[in-house]
Length: 89
Image (cartoon, rainbow, N blue to C red; front, side, top):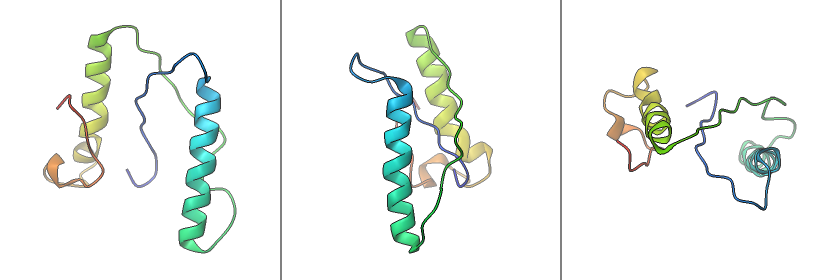
């Protein structure tokens, strides 16, 4: 998606969600700024999270995430979106 990111992950015992999000935002902001030859914030401070309780929830959310570019009309077929990859489609 051009203006936001969906991530579906399973946390382990080692890291909290906020630690993971902080590392993701930091590393990606460095890369974006380096590519654009600029500096400054890339991400908003806040993020939205949703805890899933069972395997069926995971499948529903994964399908939603994968199909988002199609719903946003970025592509006519999801296979045409270069950044998708999932086993739940």
